[in-house]
Each structure stands twice: as C-alpha cells, then as structure tokens.
Image 1 (cartoon, rainbow, N blue to C red):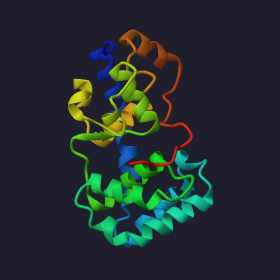
Image 2 (cartoon, helix red, strand yellow):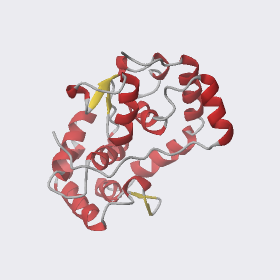
Image 3 (tube, rainbow, N blue to C red):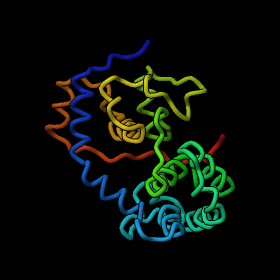
Length: 210
C-alpha cells in the first residue's frame, strides 16, 4: 500500500526548491563551460571540480579513481559528444566507469548530469535513481520498488505536484527531500522552523551495474 502523500507538503517542497533556481543555473553554466573545448568539459565532470573545488558528492572518492575515470571518459569523448539522448549518455559513462573501483552509481549519474548541460540533453520521462534519490522514491512507493524500477521510475509514478519539474529536478528533489516527502504540512513547517534544509547526499557508493 502506498503511503499518504500530502499535496500541500509537496507544493511547499517545490516552492522551497525553486528558491535555489539561480544557484542551480550558475552551477549548470560552470559544467557547460561555453566556449571551452569539450575535453575541458569532460575534465571538469570527471574530476568533479566545481569552481575549482571537489564537489561534495565525490569528496570520499580517491583522487586516483577520479583521474582514471577522467581518462576513461576522454577515451570515449566522441561517443559522449554524439549521444542522442540522456539515457545513451548515461550508458556510455557507466561503461567507462565500470572497471574503476570507487566510481559507483552516484558518480555515473552525476557525471552524465554534468555533461548533459553542454550537450543539451534531457531525460524527458525517466527519473534516474541512485543512493539518496532511490531512498526518496522507495518512500513514495511504500518502502519497496519493483526490481525493474531500481534504476529509474516514470514521471507518472510520482506525486502530481512534482510533475511540473524536469526529470532531473525531480531526481534532485527525491534526494534532497527524501526525509520530508511524507510529512504532513504541519510537520514540514515545524521542521523548517528549526532546521535548515540539507543538500542531497548518498551512502558510500556501490560499483555500477547494468
């Protein structure tokens, strides 16, 4: 049985999330690196360097793994740049990272997400899941996801109030707000009155799989 989802809570989550639109746009511009060679875009994404610093999502990954991952991406640069859609881009990144210990599903998704800004690719219907985002999706589903949905869910499977967001924004919300998606409006307001929102984070990364 699916748990109760309160539309007012979802609306408040979306409203709060959208207050960060400018900072997300600035970050997207960094990863896009307009005017730079595509190899530079790959290097930023592969090394997880945001404004010259390691992105918090990849702070625990050994530098060796990130260097190997970057080299693996550069070796398939033409396949990355010619990806026709986000799913194909995700698969190319996953295949490049698979042999590298320390680069798991969050690194795969984040890297594809960073590259997509330059390539202009969107996932239109599928919300890709990893670590924290999967926790949020499981909670909305009542604690479990079907095996075939472990890597991604469809837009129609999420609460109506989230569907105006892009698939990539929905993934972000599922991760950031995984502990708040099922709160009542009163509980959400109470939590917000005494605590700042937390960034998206995940558990230590497993190795990527098909």
